[in-house]
Length: 380
Image 1 (cartoon, helix red, strand yellow):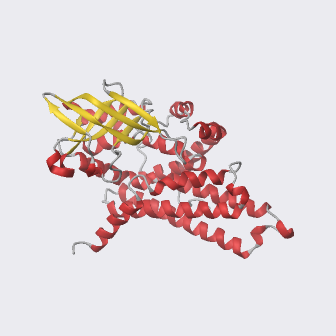
Image 2 (tube, rainbow, N blue to C red):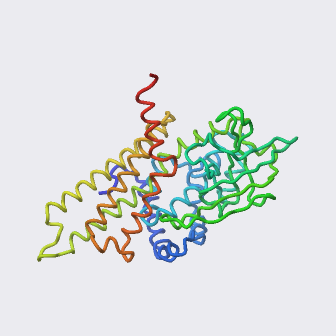
Image 3 (tube, helix red, strand yellow):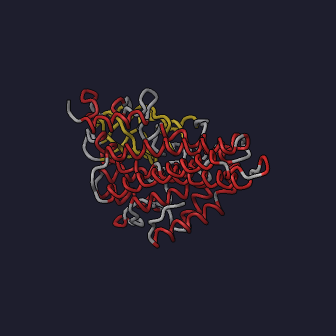
């Protein structure tokens, strides 16, 4: 069962993307997985069919898809490979930060670059602080009409692919989270370098590296918003991204159920398909219940965001539930396939490795539970 409430436009765009990915991406996933390599040739072909900058609003030259449509589109990427889905989705992350706090000139310029196939990366995480954005140590010191940035960012999605970085740095160390600012930093600026690429357990088609800033001079006009706006800008951008960041998981879980169901039809120990066993039917039923619930939560969060309503708590609920439900679904699919599920010759083993990181990035699920708990309890 797939989503039953798609509009004709959504059916057309998701169908077109599914056909494209099955033809262009699926055949090379095993090789790219082995090499831990992002297939840039597929990214370029996506641009040829007009699908760069999917989440850029119409007023800035993008297609203007709402978050519900974007979620359904990103499901299709997840069906084929979640690693590619992560890097492709993150290619436009820089626009989210600029849209959240930048001026009109910055918005127009960033949109134009990303719609022409350039790639951005968001540099927040550091070796000593992941989900703790306020623990940032990278510094940006004002010197006349520019800032000088020093620091190291780690686990940066598209760190080695990006043409431009959005960097969170401390401009006033005495103010905590209110002393952070955001900057647009060019990849080719003197002092910018890319560190090691992570040899990851999963999402291996997604590029993940350190990015190092050593006495990098950045013009004042490259600051996004005012000094001290950095934390606010990051939180605003992340709030909007959470409903769609987990969308590839829905596609991957959907595919895992399809694989498990097919196996149930053809695996015939003791002379009959295992799909006739009540214990297996119950497993499949629970997997489908979780999938449809996860998709409904995701789409509801996207709808609320599309209506311009605050979704901080709802976004955290969506991210947490979907990431954990997808893990359970894929783990159960592996159990149904038994030894075949555990073998690298079949896709479920890879899916289980890919799904695990979603409980960590975009804010760990423990942090999400803190947000949910504090919101529900309120002041006490």
